Length: 231
Image (cartoon, rainbow, N blue to C red; front, side):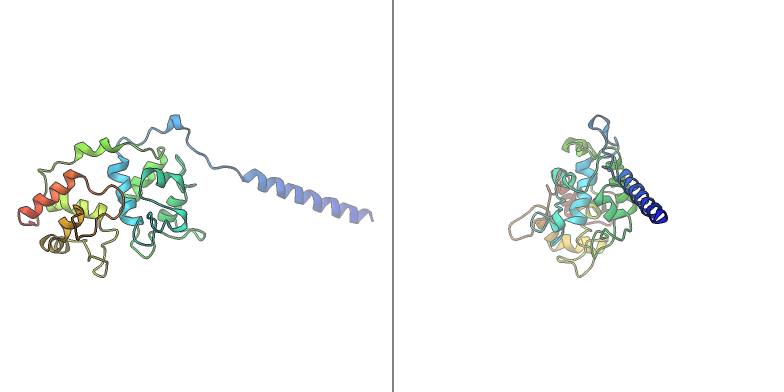
């Protein structure tokens, strides 16, 4: 009888210890205090972060206003930080886990599409780590010059940032925009300018968010007007 009591007591102590151990490891993730959310001075949310989400995550059937798959709508600052982003804590951010970490319990994103580039991951990672702040629309204004419209330095980066997430293969709706030949073809047949200016009879592009800025549209128009040079 004494041995049985010792075993029962011992098992009880193990159970209590296990419970305490589990509880001691369960806690709310660290969230950076608002006063420490300074942001990265090299990152502008409107210019650098939002276009990545718009291009890579808001395709039809994904995380746009119509579908908001799994409860995520990633087309504006408020919607992006509402769920899946923990300011100052990448490891606890489900969105970061899905785009950057191979995890058995989180589906890899973007779904059925190329993953984000090292540059995109670096920008989003730094943005989250420094507080995931909205730096405002004004931070990116001075970086655009409508008088600069070379394909390599101006047009291709716009395509890569805003368009390639959807238009990455020849079978993509509307065709691909991954290289000079494909972008020139879209420009020559009028589709490119029609889409980005939301002209009647064309599908507005990008399909979510605020669209391209007036300066970016002017750059593309100027490039087309000069004969779409591969410069």
